[in-house]
Image (cartoon, rainbow, N blue to C red; front, side, top):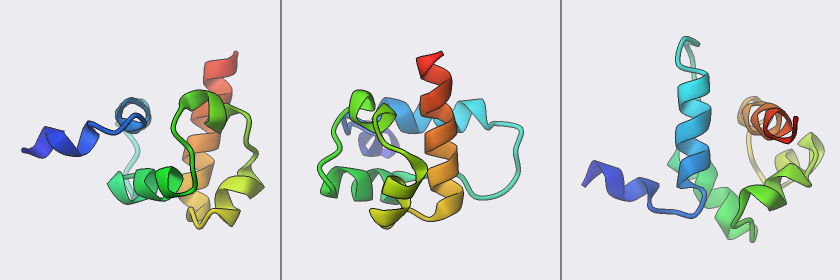
Length: 78
């Protein structure tokens, strides 16, 4: 049952960010953040890579989580 929350199209993004930040203590993105992205119409990593930090924050994503998403998406473009 625990794995069902990762069945979203953005589930791999959540798992990848969490694993890349594995040694960091403190809040990391979770299913609530993914739901906010999906409710805003974001369904793919391609859409996220086209966004800037400000756009993520304007969607209601807390800045600390927006930073995690933005940094991860930039690394994927390299």
